[in-house]
Length: 534
Image (cartoon, rainbow, N blue to C red; front, side, top):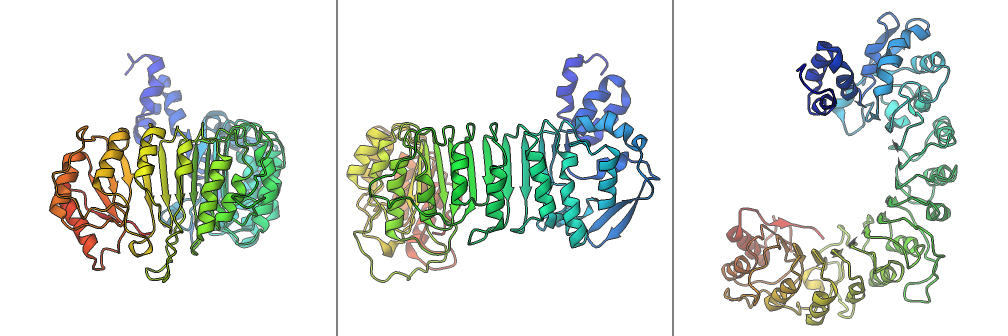
């Protein structure tokens, strides 16, 4: 080991387990620094700090959900000297310090009492980030996590000592709470940290969703308005009120935005009407937008804040409501995407708009004119993926195939599914059209369309030979008669297809089409057919 070049030691340490790193640190002075750098780089509990404190300084009490440590005497600077000098500056990431409602195994993680936290703060002269001055990423427990160990009053106090762990190098801050209301003292500590003009690049603020704008929405607004956030490039939050959108639009570096439970927003105009376009320069750096709105209209309202010449490449809208959207809402969303998303930049569109609560026989009278027109999406010539799940069907015809093969040369994923078999007319395309489509889109590796498989005889073959890229095939609710002939045709034309999915009924319900597609899957490969709910 002594013959290892010094510059190689840090790399070797990154691939070692903690037990081996500890042995390495104790074996040689040359190895101590690199080994300790890796050992202390990521901290997942208060235990490392506790182990560095003098034994006569602390004592513990065994509470219902784990150990809580208290000071036995006064804390003096000498008690922290070794920790601050040798270990504190090595910490770069702090993750889940305490147990959560979803991680019962974390109950073994110890907790620091308010008295001990306050003593540590006083002993370090109340310096921000004193316990980890060079930290880069912090996932801090919200008050409800502290409540599992402490009573309500002291848990609110304990969570506010976050400033001990926010150093000047922090670039990634994550706060997640199971409640919608954060205590004022905790929010005060967060605002004080934000006012230090930290160069935070990633910010996560997750709180319980409220159907109507509440304390969590307005806290997020006030927090985002507290200073300029000029370095922020990633933001993930539960929901934002309308008055926060302008603040987001002016963030110069924001490239990724997640809104995981977006509440109601009102559109500035009705889709299809005269567009009200925002000024150029809004959301100037945004490249990825992921929304889980309660209503489709909220997604429409947010997209209307995008100027047409934006840099958005990925748009994912995953509707979380149990109610089914209307045809007008779904078509309006598609229209809004074309109006406010730059076709010269867009690469991936994913819309999941169906409701899991809609019964099979919920719709008695079907309007065959309620078909979603997606032809306008073909203007985005850089598209690599289109995935849309909707309770309304897509009339993907021979005309669409001809346009798609010319307009979308880079397309790798095309999935248009959702409407049940008795909620749509018979499919207008068959296997010959599927072969034409895959021959024209040679990069396609996932395809999801409804087509008429009843006429497949098994000898159909594409003129250009097999398409080897296609690996996943979603047949949606495609009718089928002969599994053996369909399997022979698919194996010949798509030799690398390993997974087939359908959307008929659940596996425990009898359906002849589902049984036939399962038989196809059994003949093609080892992967079992999957049911995908819609």
